[in-house]
Image 1 (cartoon, rainbow, N blue to C red):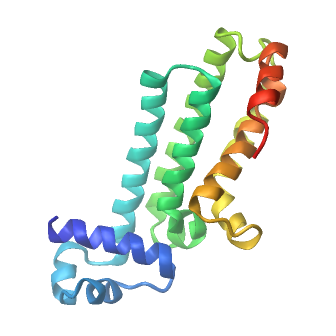
Image 2 (spheres, rainbow, N blue to C red):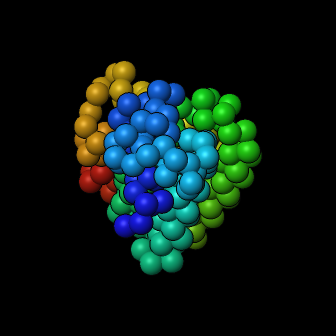
Length: 207
């Protein structure tokens, strides 16, 4: 692994463990046992590292979505697996979600990039819902307001479950991912056709 990649990896670990607002490039250099000058050769400021990490997160999120749509096929188990994979990924980059306001304050251009990705995620979920309707898993002719509400709730939970978990439940990663992905899955209950709803209640409802 080259020095630049080591810096990114160590920064992610420190941001997650100690907090984005307290970790500086000097801290990262000390942990890597390199000089600040060596680190600054690759990154002038910690904000540049954050920009790289957010870009990595976006790329991995899009990869998961594309893999789900291309390889997994439309089914309840595959949707559940996809949601768990996303929450696992978000946990690995948890400092971004814990420090939304601080990150976007320090690197304003990242907010527009994040909002662009949010819009793209929204469209992708709309496509998933349409596919589930086509497969007769979700009901047709669902009110637009209901669909928009479900998608908004999915993003609110996925993007904020880490902060909530730190205060309320304090689950470790695997338990948190299982618990909160199930809460998200339950949001789909009003969308199921009766047969699939019964199947879901019998096989997927428990946490």
